[in-house]
Image (tube, rainbow, N blue to C red; front, side):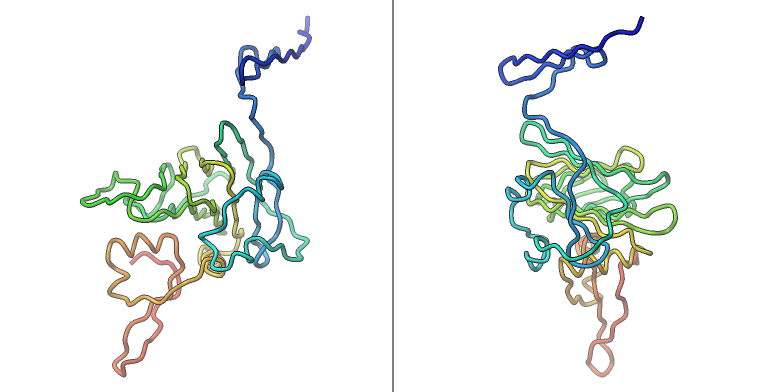
Length: 253
């Protein structure tokens, strides 16, 4: 005999207890909301801004990532829709954003951190510390960049930026899944998928800017870690004294 589903809701203090046959005993905070994030195209083709609601968009802090705040907040005319849409959960002042990608996706980026270039399976907390004497197990260094570069199994790439200045957990431990956890409310921007990681980083640089760096500084540990987030244009002095461009993409030395 099939069980009849019954739904009884009752408030106990600030908590809502859902009494459904398949959710018997689960306790859910009264402020819990979830769903697919809303999107609008920004900046250029292939770049999308996501928020949980119009109220959350208005409540988000100004961007410290974009060189021009209007580029983040102003939609463009584009009839394309994102290929990958994040989901969200908001509860107890936290916003959890999850984006699931195809089987075989690998992850890079996560800002200025120690450890291997590939970040698949890692978890990082964007919390700046004076990390003198850091080693491969130190996940917080001198700067924080909640950014993930996902390389898809077909060779295309997708960039994902959590535009928050607060402490953010970047969780890549679940296979082919990116998860950001930070205090509400913040916006998420995706770049792509584009044909290559280089194309993603060019698009990212159109949002956050780039800078010139002498080659000898690029190979220092801190600046190399910094290159995980920024799209760099690197120059080397020529015999004549003028700069010669030698690299315009993110490559491991």
